[in-house]
Image 1: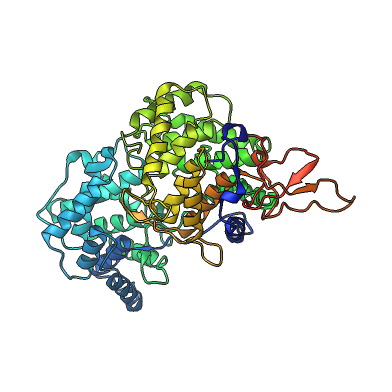
Image 2: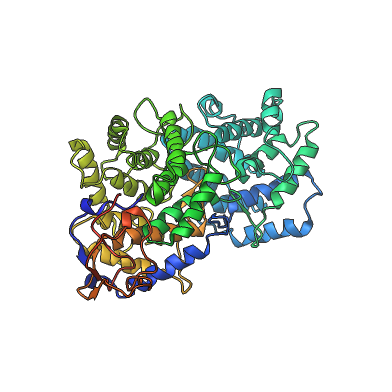
Length: 570
């Protein structure tokens, strides 16, 4: 996701093409993200409430007959669901109505089911179908008994989270018709510890508790699990999908700040936190408290550490690269989680972006790009990933196979040509981009698109997208947008800071294309004085890719927040 090297970019654009407010907007956004960096280097934000977990928590209180949940907390969940009965889609509306005992009807549940399955990755469709049936069963609104397809519960090729979820779903769908086997009970109970949500995943946690309701001797486990659940109740009364995504936020924000020239002291503080939460296998998980590493977090952490100081962080980077290579699929692609799980387009693009920092693994990269090109659809998009926007995977694939390279076969260049065509065709009248074809513009989809537009010859689409982004900026510098992340796919959840980080990342890509003004300032300064930051720039550049070459003059940009030298490592 890091910015391309200057030599890989087309000629620079005059700053006069872009809104005069770009520099100030970029500066405010970076200042906002900098304020979110903690003393320990972590960049944290709260995962917002979601209807699904809130409904399952309320249903669990009722099913278990527990007196451990304070009536006030239960009533707050009810009020949250009442406010969201309209829902953001058929699934939310049906789930909220079922949890409130308002009835849903077979047709609305069927619409919710088909909507979920149609947006799930092909390899996970049957599991998602079983999960939706289980959700309505937990809410007391299930249809005729449905034991699901046997393939839905085959855990041999599943990563630990999916395996536990599958076992819980199997037990829930079996209901009172079958006794949960001893091994399954043992697996489910192993995820429970008072005060701790296993792997930070509230949805799995609640599914496990629902599966254990009615199992002899499990009353205490369910009661303790409910108490733990309500430790994470949000101010609005709802419950979130996960406790947090702090490691993912830290890695993305770190790379975005690096690309915008944040102070090195802050960047090294962020790096220090990432090193402290790096797992024994060399990878990173999405949150500090989880143990299952994933390709997404690991690749972005590698890019950030490489950009900041490849020599200082040589050993952590080497460990992370070994972790990535260990999960590579036989098809040349990379999965989200462990070895043997299905390769995915987005994660393969992410792996290429990380591995390309190393100057080796050439055959691994070529094989991965062949896989990536083979997964592209005719319209330029890719199969569902972990974002609700169809432009997330394309921007990462575009960077993985940037058109400035001549090393790639025709199929890879064709892939990028189709990506560019997709983005050009998807721009809305207001200059922004929506999550799906015909959807209204949102900030994070527009940020994804802007990263691609920043590498094109014509500045006009990038100018329009920039205006759209700046129009969605709050006075404090943050950015307004829709929920974008998915988990489990295709259920959206919201961590607002990720919109800020990805928008900052996009503006970092953009400002590298903007030519400085013709105002010349002598570089010579009085002995003992500090160099002034370039006008319009929040701070001096701090990452190797953005280092300013020695020169007898400096140019002050009028439309960009960082200077645009034409040298440095990408």
